[in-house]
Length: 217
Image 1 (cartoon, rainbow, N blue to C red):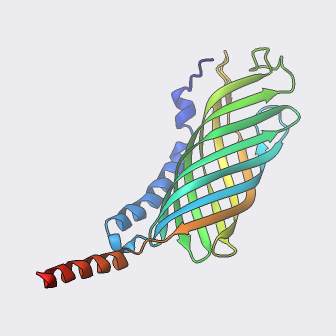
Image 2: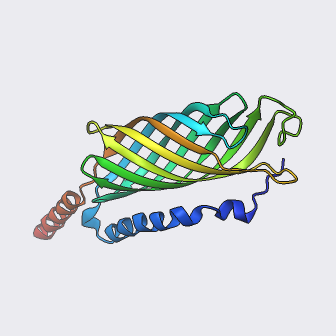
């Protein structure tokens, strides 16, 4: 099935998130210019309960969201590549998405505030296969554009609780067109594995090796 996303479906609502993404990205880029501020990398996995308003039929869905990130850490910020899968079902429709994109984060003590911008493939299923948008098959598909953010609160070094919000943009390629704008609220747990990188220690060892080689001469 050919899926066509009209420009207004892609651009609507982006003005709300682009300024936040720009602000969050300025600090990591500044930190990147100073190697001494690099803090290493991190792998993150998360699982959440999700409450979804599907923007179709008026009844909410519930389900789960799981995913993971590869994160480059800086002094107060981080830049990640995130992948996530969401599955939510309800009495009228069910929606699932699979995709990923960039994620920007600012850390302050135990609090991590983040914003993300994701692209996914999405499937919507209908309890009534003759419902508008289902083509008589009971399901349809779309490219899904998502922006959102949330807050993590550290419970320990590798465990945190997460509160997450995502706003989605769907096009079901129907005439007249059907554009859906679901909203998802999620709460769950985050697990982190950090890989520290002490550049100063590495440089000190390298300098010591060079000094020893010069003495041997």
